[in-house]
Image (cartoon, rainbow, N blue to C red):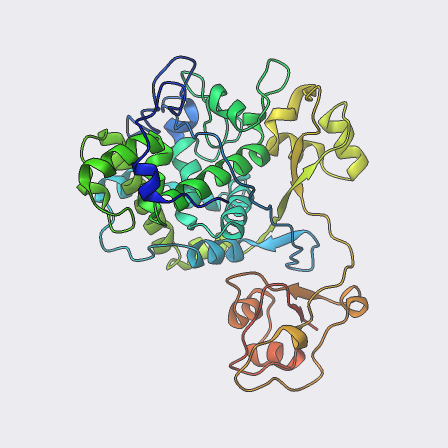
Length: 412
């Protein structure tokens, strides 16, 4: 990703109509997502105007790593998704969250924990992509505001998909939008595009996630113009100090922070954590071979066609792009591979002793757990019904050992 110098950007001439982030053909820069203040269910119904990200410039690698939970390959525990989200927050403190938006989005924790929806695995996919791109996980809450984490929703005025791209913006990202196939309804394609754009914005505004979120909502040129009027540096600028922006744009950051605090506080409730404490599919974006249909591809790959239709509305109903090989979001399928073993990946002030290393051959024949970001020894032991002391003993670890993502821990 090219990191744009803010001073150079501020010295640029004001954008012309051709360079203004579009909402629709011939229309000025986007006025923002959720401008009516509707909650996630209203966003999913199409009552919420879209944000319209501009074209991306940088590649963001998609994370694909195998995590096992409860002995099921290609799944992980929902609590590990929540832990990764919390660990990636830029501002985990919640003393100043907006009470209005806290009330407005009060049902978001229950939506995330809903066992009958695909929200939790989709949220995990977005969190993974943001963590891989070294971006704050507050951005994983944008789809709550935009679409209610409904990948097939279409909004009034033309936006569609998880991130509510309008057609012009989607095409600027190289996403095919046509009568036969609409890539905006692909959470794999739209997430890749959104993360690239957020990566650009985060660098453009000096790592100030609040200004980056405002730019995602209103267009980066509007925020740059406000910075120019304000005269301050991007990193140290508070959103409230910028003048001349829409109330919707100021509220956008408050919504994201309120959602983050709602999920943070929900983690203190044992009942809610219990709803997350289950195996969920770990999703990966796969470049699919020739169709002709999602169902046919699912059959060849050994996936559940009904699940893939829910996860990939762009490809449901026999739709398949004519030219490119589309990205399909599907549960990770794992095979016995070389994995980092506990003994080799541990960092410990007092080196671990014992014979806890797990070889790939041994891992294939025993219950194991692959460590992810945010995992702790205590959480892993609790998840698998082990005493902490027993888990440490099995893996030759000490009380002060540090778990590293990719470590394979023995559970028996």
